[in-house]
Structures are given as C-alpha cells and as structure tokens.
Image (cartoon, rainbow, N blue to C red; front, side, top):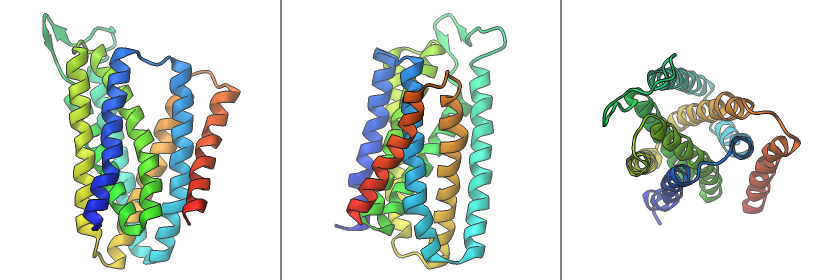
Length: 251
C-alpha cells in the first residue's frame, strides 16, 4: 500500500474519534474527575510517542540547523494558536458570565474554531509524518493523536453547547473539523514521502514542538485544574507505559 493509502487508513481513527468525542459530550458530559484522568492518560501517551518515535527519528535525520529551525517555528505556531484560542474562548465567556446570544441567534467562537482547525491540521500532518517514518511509528503516532483528538472533540462540543448552540449542530461542527485531520495526514504523506533529509528533520522538529506543547501546556495544565488524585496521576504513567510496550513489540 502506498504512503497516501496508509495515511488514509490510519487517519480514519482520529477523524472518527472527533465525532465520537463530540457525541459523548452532547449526550452525557463526563464529570471533571473522569476528564482529568483522561487528560493525564492522553498526556502520557503523547509524551511516550514523542520520546519513543519522534525524537529518535529526528536524531536519525540529523541536520541540526534544520531541526532547530523547525522546532522554533513549531513553538511559534503553537504559542500563537494558544493565544488565538484563548481569545476565542474569552469571546464566548465574558466577565459577566453571559453567553453571546440574542434570541435564537448564536455567535460562534470563530477564532477558537480556527485555532482548533489548525491544531487538527497539524495532528493530521503528524499522522502523515509517522507513515513516512515506518508502519510502527505511524501506528504509535496515530494512537496518541486519536486519544488527543477524542478529548478535543469532547471539550469543543461542550464549549459550543455552552454558547447556546444546539447539540446536533455542535456535534456536526466538531465532526466536520475532524475531517481537517484527514487533509493534513493525506497531504503530509503525499508531500513528505520523497522529501530530502533536511526537510524531514525540520518537519519532525516541528512535530516535536507541537507534541511537547500539547502534553505539557495543554493536557497536563487543564488536568491539574481539578484536585489531583493518585488514580489520575497513575493514568499518566499508564498511558506512557502502554505506548512504550507497543513500540517495543512493534520494533
């Protein structure tokens, strides 16, 4: 199977996860403790994928100047997305606690949706990147990003319904955004399949920055907004161990 074909098969999982997460959120929103446990687990999975698959691949590619450039660009992009997302969230959560609704009209948080869309595009790119590294690396990255996209769909759908949007429309928007992941994966596999080593080093470093930010500055920060428990902390290590074992078995 071609790289594009492999990417198409693998990216179906995070795309489906986006839809599943949004449906769960609108039908029965998980409690804060369960959400915290999921975030810890997802962070462990992402850190394991970063340490076990992305960084070793980056070291193999070499080309330190390209790697530094890619990592720097990745940091700039994720920081900009985070600021853009906070701005969109603030627009739907004003200081007086009122939602931006007038009668039946609902103002969508466009800046937040754009930030999520770009985030999902990067996630898809990482799936396509993983395919170029090898079948095992592609699978590991797909598992990590599927869990991350599942939580993203869950949290975004919950935020959209809080603005006054109907449950059906919130779920449809999240599902539609999930398709952006497929664009990134298929495009990434097509473009990176025959890329030179310096380009691969830059893209790998970009992906490393994105994964590092996701785990440390998003998942764990939000998870720690709830009271820390032994079980939730253990979920981080469980997620890490599972991905490590899968990587060893696949290697």
